[in-house]
Length: 73
Image (tube, rainbow, N blue to C red; front, side, top):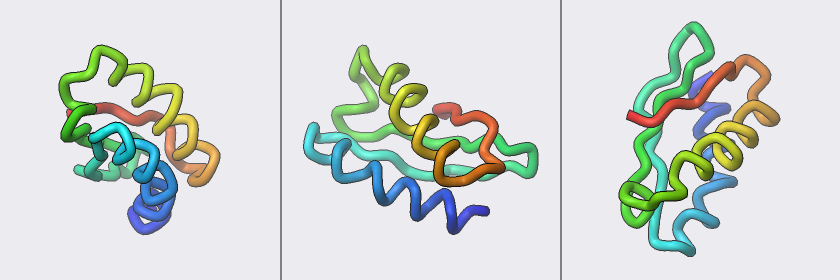
C-alpha cells in the first residue's frame, strides 16, 4: 500500500511545488490512516488543512481504496 500512496502523492506533488510547498509521506498505517508532513510554503499556509483534506486526502482515497484518512503530523 505504501508504494501506491507514494505514486498517488507523486501526482499531487507538482501542484504543491508550484506554490512553493511539498508533501512528505511519514507513515502508512495498517488501519488506513496515512500520515504526511506538509513542507515549504504549505507548512505555514492558513489553507493547508483545506489542501490536506480536499486535495491530498481526496486524491489518495480515489487512487488507493484502502486509505481511510490523511492526517498531518
